[in-house]
Image (cartoon, rainbow, N blue to C red):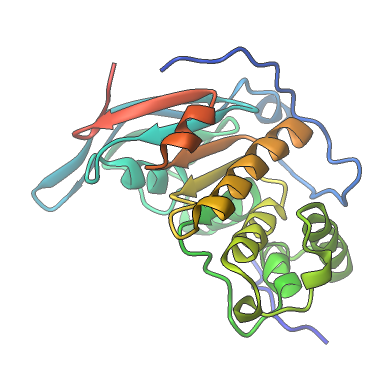
Amino acid sequence: MRFFEAPRIHAERKESSKVRKPLTDLPLATHDLPQTALNSKHVVRAVRLTKAYGDLTVLKGVDLEVERGEVVAIVGASGAGKSTLLHLLGTLDRPDSGQVCIAGEQVSDLPKTRLDAFRNRSIGFVFQAHHLLAEFSALENVMIPGLIAARPETQVRERAKALLGQLGLFARLDHKPGQLSGGEQQRVAVARALLNEPDVILADEPSGNLDSDHSRELHQLFFKLREQFGQTFVIVTHNPDLAAMADRKLVMVDGRMAP
């Protein structure tokens, strides 16, 4: 019996040679992106983004390029525009002007139905709060993006199990979020973000609610996923240790990227 009915219709650069590897040990998601998009050097590209809310201008012409397999940290004071930028990159909001391209697809002007499907397939999210559904098990929570994409439930279930196993949670498949530690909850959220094999994972203060030990484990997990699978991450953080680990640390000041 289905538990969920899917709708019918996701600075300085260090030396790196990250190549996105196929997840050969996991059931693969199916992408219908054009080959030119899959081969694009920049998985994220933002050009002259602006955004205002009423009289408050939050973003003032932000440019950003992120290569496939990079881990990029964005830091800055509260109110500098970091989370707003992440929301625009994640297509959760639209810029007032400028363009966002993800894996070669210009997404800023896509109609809502296409945009929703593209987001679910190509963008993964990890937030400060895990946003797991309390009534569903860890396995069921991880499965949700695949069911929304109308993929076969058996395939989605197997991939979710494999991901949770990769993240050390195979013994927690049937546990509800309230039965998991904070670190385990965030690892479930990471598995959910990976379910559709997205082009990029956007993380907004992902360790903000964790203690120092669980924060360190989560940070190491991001880089393990990059090394194993070539996963691309854009991470907004106030954590100096995480920012220092990234390939690049970008600083936002008053709605702009600092030189």
